[in-house]
Length: 257
Image (tube, rainbow, N blue to C red; front, side):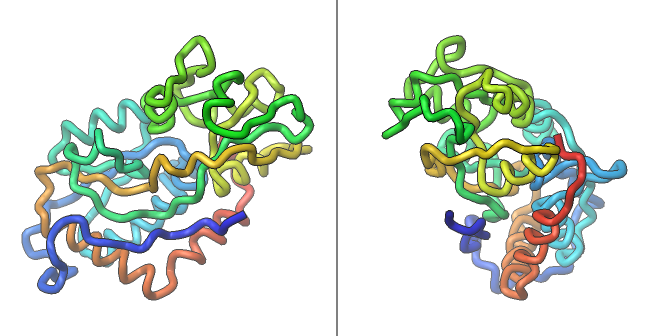
């Protein structure tokens, strides 16, 4: 199985050469919205923590930007990030539909996404995405994978079961009431760690073509701020700060569901 990876950082806005990390005209703060999406973001002791939350906290500190992290259900977070001119949302996949709505910083930490089955469910056999239409799949309403499956001919009430969060489908998947789980290497490992006697799961299909995680900033956020955060992320990756974050959360056993 390929290792989780921090995608090659690339600037999606303007060249960085002249962008200082300490911004003289920065707003008092940015509000960065996210959802309960362990191990990338979750609430721990009344603070938003996780791989991408901690990574962005470091980037904000380095860029001299005061960032407040707020956790909401996904659709609420997405709505607020479009309304608040001093805000952003993470970990969000950059799609053609979403691209013009935001300024994009990243990518952040992602890992390949797959359809999983319980290992003993040998009755579930997939050769391609079309084969998955014969089985039930849990999707979070408003999530990129809901959009992805709908675009490929799947339908609610037929093969898609809608939930309000990504993790809501997991207990039903473990009980065999949902056939397939959409998740990634990092996420499914975090979820399984919460089970006393976790069942074995296995990959049946790669669906990582949907994209990587990013920070998406409101268009009204000054371009210099987006550039400074991009530069800070690139420096953190160059300095080797990202992989230790991933390892920290792979080793933690906190309540994530």
